[in-house]
Image: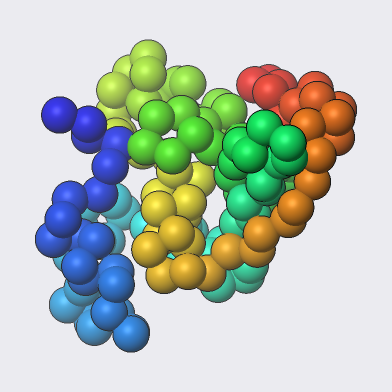
Length: 131
Ligand SMILES: [Zn+2]
């Protein structure tokens, strides 16, 4: 079971045109403040999907307060909370960047930037930082 993925019921709730009060309550109970923050970054257009050619690969980036985080959907995020709270202490199943990426993809609320593999190598130096 992949606990970093939203359940089908959650995906269905998020697919609706607008979230109902009870949906928001459900998510807040389950994910706490992280859900509110995730919604906020999605609404602030801070989720970007880079598409690189010629490899035709995608990289998702979520802009945090001080830097950008690379998110591998449902698997990984380069932020400190992912390392400390998800991997080490297992207190939570997802950081808010992982949540935001899924919400953005479900609700189709992200930028797409087309770029090249040469550029990707340069950007990865910054994106792969985990400090
Ligand atoms: Zn994160």
